[in-house]
Length: 245
Image 1: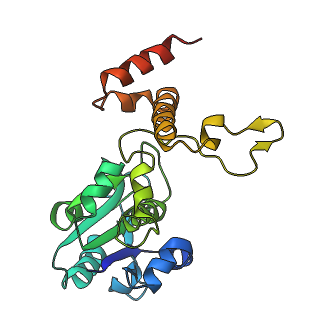
Image 2: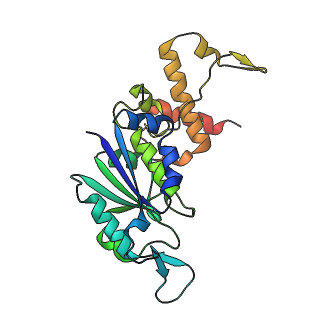
């Protein structure tokens, strides 16, 4: 089954180049994913193709009108069999790898990119399945979050990533940040690759990588450790790291 993404946006040209580049573009060329961009103004009914209006009750900014959004969602999603309608919003569920894996179960995903002060609340109530956020900060619109979600989901489509085993070793795949990576030359401006990586002992390398992943997570994202079920040896290792100056 091909993974299909539909994106409702006021700036399809801003997304098209990115979706045609690198891994995403190659996945589309091979028929593993489909990207469909929809200009929201095409669903406006007035001669000016207006998609926003003033806020009821007063206040600054404009709100995206419900009519074009509802028409666009209905037109695009009418053929969906197992779809999910997502609005990219700072009020949504925070995007994490576990959420990406959950959403990867859907064959069709329709993404709504808001602008201005947001969209009419009635669209959220009647046409949107859920809201997704990149984090606690504000952007001009939902285009960048949409691209982030599309890329994260596309990487999980079978056949997209050349070595699927590498997916299991990436940051957040097991709840930890990823271990450090090195390549040639073995010494660069006085900085050497750890000797253990040059000796070829796979078991020792894997043990080193696990310890380094724990160390890096403790240093950069200690909050992640609270969610994990660690072995007694790993807990002792973390305690020893915490005691180091």
